[in-house]
Image (spheres, one colour):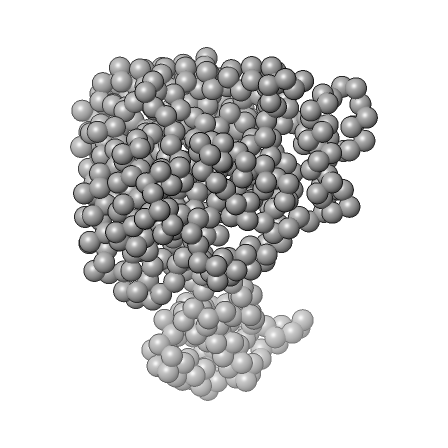
Length: 567
């Protein structure tokens, strides 16, 4: 194999005999290691070989051979995925990093959102666009969309953070009492100290009382309550415990499609197997037990199904499950020995008449000891959703039911590695589960603020559904709960072909064009999963009403032009 021209010229002009030896060494490297990259990388070596010192004198064969060996070694390491540490190569590269991380995707903060950030910077720099701002409707971040914090929650957190405020007449007595009780449970009576890995005892007791009241008196053991860094932390932690095996024995996790991308991302990261079961769009995104059966039976051919995940109310689909549906799921889990995960973070966000939130825990115990003493269940809640919208505090909890005591000990060991969830987030979670009570000083203000938020969300859910269903080539199921609309969009075949030419999913292509032409940032349905041949987008309904109206009108105008362009 001859060397590249530049190297051969330098070697041949300077020292013909040494040039031959250099070529022989290179040939040997290529033959011995299959170094497809050696020839490409020798161009840089030639300069090192030619100019050895400050005087620029030619070096001999030994210097060139040493350089060649360095390049060759780097090639071996780079081409075989090892971690080179010399000659400018980084130890960690895309080729040798954890492949499970590389395979992980999270659509809610994916390419569309990155592009939106670039456009925002361009607008700030004065670049002319057909719009004046980017409207971000991609994520359920209530306060980023303008929702005001709940006063009582912020007061309690402020008092815990800066206890000197407890003497101020500007804070209500009930907020002070809660702050003092929490601080007594903190090490050194300071919010800056670590808590127990499960969370502060007094807050776990408050969560237990809340769950018991919510579920009509079903008993709760505070030792089954684990405070988490948002619900996401709890979900990923329990998944680490559940997922194992290799090959056909790898753990399979059944998730709804469409799903919240946290699940697919965590499954990829942990090297497990994603098992899709499809929600029925034609029936309001309902869950069909026959579909669960189909999904499970097919998965058993290539993995070991162990986990069944339910999101209720649904994200991104917004459906609220009936008691019968929940009973069907529990019976299915019991019959097939599946571990249940119930994502219930939107339990306060119910809008449609006739819909009501029923927790899996409550229904499980109402079904009697046959199920309540055997079905393993973990349910999740959060400060980020509901009426508080305190995403940044990263507060949440999970309740663990029927976990094997020995496994529970291992679970607590796993939790201890992270030390503890953020204590300010724990305080925020406490206010969610222990709000002002009738007769307390803050009760009326708190109730007014809570109902105002929920009323506005219901209004925006109805508005979004109505407007989206007036757009030709678009259909939106009833928004029964949660914080999103997930309309189905018709994409013409010409647009589908153009999307393929750009290497994009059709709804990614659609959403990217929507962003570039209107400044509206939404997430393509392909990021959540959908039946083949269908296309969707997810948009949050959290925007202020007037801005939401602008978004919906601009979306309507864009869709009409899009259909005309690609007709």
